[in-house]
Figure 1 (cartoon, rainbow, N blue to C red):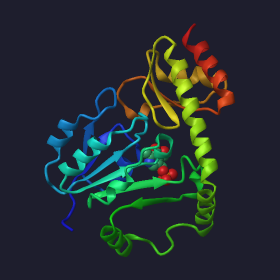
Figure 2 (figure 1 turned 45 degrees about the horizontal axis):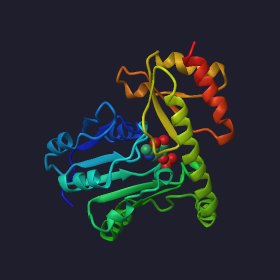
Figure 3 (figure 1 turned 90 degrees about the vertical axis):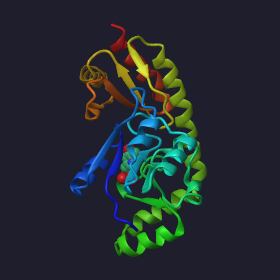
Length: 258
Ligand SMILES: Cc1ncc(COP(=O)(O)O)c(C=O)c1O
């Protein structure tokens, strides 16, 4: 395997990639998503310079909540001379995984986790899917002797056996997300970005910190996306349980229509 040079981040995205790459002193090439968090494929293609880079792409993306298309991912895979690491942490909420493309592309590594739809973030179970040759190489060169706690693995296996229930709760999230989206879009001074995850990214005209504080006073915790550092007023709201939906929407109304 030729040595890998740049790590390419397509941002804003999950902030741990930048932190980990910095900790490993990797050179980062940061490429911006468009203002509406879609991908500027031409720009990304131009930036990939054949230097065996590793491109990190979260799809669905955090914090934007959108998923990139199969064709976009295919174009990236065919544009890089290195690897594409596709983080599908939220894919259970969207329904369309590209994991099958690992059969077709030797340079695709898909990351999945039990932290989101399966709800066991604290147990730290995740996995990577890639072609057999690369998996064997990764296993022999990188894998620690006891990479995952046995209890965590056992719980993950029980959850897989109860996949029907997980699917039901995923369907509930999808239904509630669509209603939350519709209701929030009726409110003034707010942009609700399309999401296929269990959260929505909102852009407001008032300072995001004020919105977070006002909602907190009403007992609703939303997250200031200040780490995206765009100077924009972005907040992230988790899709609530269905029976909390009206209360959450009511609080947004109270804060935004004053
Ligand atoms: C895109 C993305 N990938 C991965 C993770 C973390 O996954 P894990 O708990 O498996 O480390 C997160 C958590 O917020 C995330 O947003």
